[in-house]
Every structure is written in structure tokens, then in C-alpha cells.
Image (cartoon, rainbow, N blue to C red; front, side, top):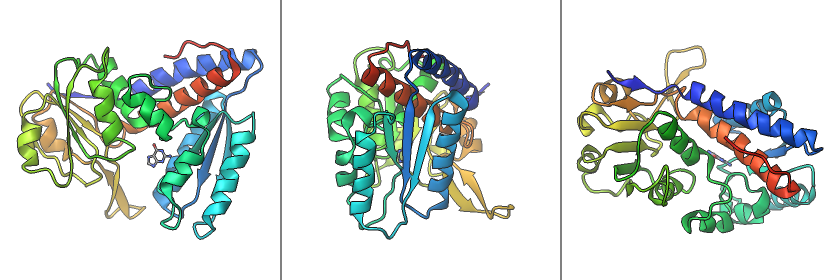
Length: 297
Ligand code: GUN
């Protein structure tokens, strides 16, 4: 029997622990604050940001939300970030990616105070992660680690194939998998659009993590019996539904499920963990900035 991993349930467990930490902080006079900044007309980005704000409200984190027109100059975004860096009520800052083409993504990431960089995308935080001393682990790869741990899937000594080399998921995912210790100690291979014979790599894997942003690109024929399949993709594809689209992952669920030992669905797999780990990082940020200790889940 294939285990279909329930990301909502795992996300709820973590959120519960994060909510307890939030209560501890509030009782000490520190209300964790998360600022989200959206500079995009993209419908999916709007949805993701509003889900993040909703999660804050449910947990007791103070949410602050800023929307900038997509055609505003980059300086407006930088000024917003500067204000948030200086605001002691804001412990975490998230600028939803992607930003418009005329805005240099790297300048945005470097502008955010590394102590408030709850995405873990600032070069200082990337460096800390790579050197095994992470401050804020990027939310989606950290969520994948939690899914594996809570499902009892060992990573030590396993061959993990990450499909996709993004700064947001693929690269940090591979880095987490090769770290010393629990949730790490794996042999990680990062595949991407120029990889020769991808199917040979995925067929050799114990764990496949699909994060390429290509709808249903990994199917059962590319997998060996007993593989763990983690689908990070959330792709909107045209469909005859009320909204005119449906969400599919990077994995062809039915054919992959026939081969997998355990698999995450889309939606309801990795997505809820991304949000739970953002709440986790925000509470960690509030703890680090206030000096009030909490025990994170
Ligand atoms: N866009 C897609 N995923 C993410 C994320 O984890 N953080 C930010 N800031 N933008 C994103």
C-alpha cells in the first residue's frame, strides 16, 4: 500500500507548536510580527500572500501587508524594506517572489535585514545554511524535511534526487539533505533542465523531490518501486472548472503513486508545510530579536 502523505495534518501539528511558542512570546510582551510585501499582479502570488497572512491571524502573529504596483520604481520597494527593517514590531519580512523584471531580485534580498529574513534568502543566511549553521532554513525545503521526519522516512545514507535548481527550493533542499545529523546525511543529486537522462537519475533514487515547476513531468515510468516521492510543484493548468484552471504538481500523481512507497499530493502535500515553516521562522525571528527563549516544534 502506498502512503499518501497528509501535508495538512503535518502542517497543523507544527502550527500548533508554533502557536504555543507565540503564546509564550506574547505573555512576555513580544507579539511576533510578519510583514509581507507584494509587488506583482500575479493571481497565484496574491493567493499565496493572503494565505500567509491568514495563517498569521490564526496563530496570533501580527500581520502587516504592503502592496506595490508592479510598475512602480524599484526604489519604492527598497524604501518599504528600509522602513520595515527599522520597525521593531516587525520581526520577519517576506517580499513575495517573483518581483517585476525591472527590479533586481538580488538587490531586494540583500536589502532585507538578515535577522528579519524569514525566507532565508539573504546571502548571509544562505552562507550560514551551506556552512551547517542555519539561522532561518528556507520554508519549503524545511517543510519537506519535516514531512520526511514525521512520516518516518529516513534520509541517512539514502540517494535523494532533487529535480530543479532554484534558489528557493532546489539548492537549499540539496544543502539540507547533505547536512550532518537528523534529516540530513543523504547523498543528494540536483537535476535540472540540462540534465542528461533524467529518468536514469530518478529511477536510481530512494527519494525524489520534484521542484522544477513543470506540470506532471515526473511519471511512474521514471520511478522504481518503493521510492518516496515529494512533489513541490504547484502549477495552474487550464481546465474546465469554475476558476478556469486546476492545480497540478510536477508529478503525474496516479502513475507515480502506483510505484511509490509514499507520495505527497497536490494540493494538500508540501504547500501547507511552506506556510507552517514561515510561521516557525517568524516566531524564531521574534525570539532571536527579543531574547525570549521558545522551544520550536
Ligand atoms: N515565491 C514562491 N515561493 C516563495 C517563497 O517561499 N518566498 C517568497 N518570498 N516568494 C516565493
